[in-house]
Every structure is written in structure tokens, then in C-alpha cells.
Picture (tube, helix red, strand yellow):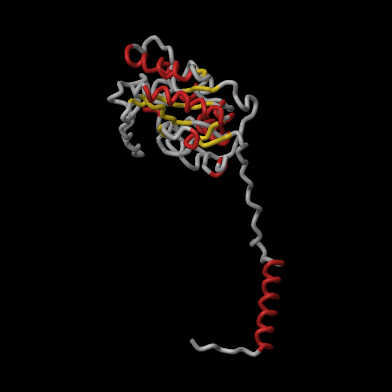
Length: 276
């Protein structure tokens, strides 16, 4: 390789010009080129963890980062398919999972911590009465104008406090659930299991997020194996401190809640809880 020597004066002059140019560009950006400061994202308190780091055998089918939701689109704030909960909730789920595994079942989570921005997305959607693209599956027998009055949608959710989860049971060995195909024919969430959207969970009588009275945990129309499955899920979780929401067989809150009076808005992703 041939080495090329430059006069020292030329090198010094070149360096001085470069420094001057850098100063001008930094100190005096052109009009319209100024950028607003990036919005700082809320962070997760240290009490929050990713469920997989505490109970890695629990199956995940996180719905809200996908288009298979009652909105027909991914929900605001769900950036990655990770279940985030408070540590006490995760440890209680790990204990319940250990017992269920011995009986040939696994827990499967659909939703966990839910940021306030996601709840706000639900509210905006519920007020748009023209958007009924997923009605045939998730609320066939409910008029969308009644979603607030009937309690299906609210401006605050216990999920935003970090101790509430939506989950079900899967009989082992678990078969995969096929992906939802946007635009595919929708089937009522309360129909027979073989006619509903396929799910590898046991038959609970309705699908997840079914806005229908048949989703009430103790609805007398739910009998036989469906009722037994609901009671198995409820009893297994009750033993480790969870309380079921009577209107939704899938909805459970671990008590005492770590944050009983706070609603969080950090995004659902690995970043906010990494290292916890």
C-alpha cells in the first residue's frame, strides 16, 4: 500500500473547515428542520414482570396485538405478544399451572396487563356505531349501541392495574391454533365449538371476548363438560387467590392487588419489563 503524505498546513485547514461546518449545521438548522422532542414512554414499575420469565410453561395466545379482536384490528399499545403482570400475579399463576399440569392441563392467556391507551381505543370503537365488521363473531345478539349500558365496554379497566388476566384451559398435549385470516367468514362466538373459530382450549361454551350472556360463568344454559371446564378453571385459580368476574368466564383478578388504585399506560412489550 502506498502512503500519501499531506502538508501539515493543509490538514490543519481541512480540520478547521470541518469543525466550522459542524458548528453551523448544529447551531443553525434550516427553517422547518427542527424536530419536536420524542415523546417519552411511561415505564413499568419494578413490580411488573413478563409472565414467561416466572411461569414459562403457560401457553400464550395474546389476541390484542393481532387483527382477531372484536375491533377487527390490533389494539393501541400492544406492540409485542407478551403477557405482562405484577409479580405476585405471575407467581400465583405459576402455582396454579403446576397443579393443572399434574392433571393434564395447561393455562393459556389471551390478555394480561392492558394499557389505558388500549382502553381508550375500545371506547372510541364502541362510539363508532358504523364499524361493525366483527359483529358476526363477537356480539351477534347485542346491539352495538348498548355496549356501554350493558357493561361490555368501560372507560377504565382493572387490567390496567396489572393483576387481572384473561385466560382459559388447554388439554395436553396442546395442538396449535391456526392463525386468523382477515376477511374470513365469521361464526358466532356462542355456537357449538366445532362451528366457532378454532381454538386449542377446552370447550367453555363460548369463545373468548364473546359479548353475550352465555359468557356468564354460572349461566344455567351451560351444562355438562362445558360447565365442568369453567368450574375447573375457577376453582384452580381461586385456590391461589384469584376472583372471577361473573360476567366473563375468562376474566380473573389476583387479590390483594399490588396496585388497587392505579391505572398504567406503558406499552405492552418486552422493553418496559426487561430486567425485572
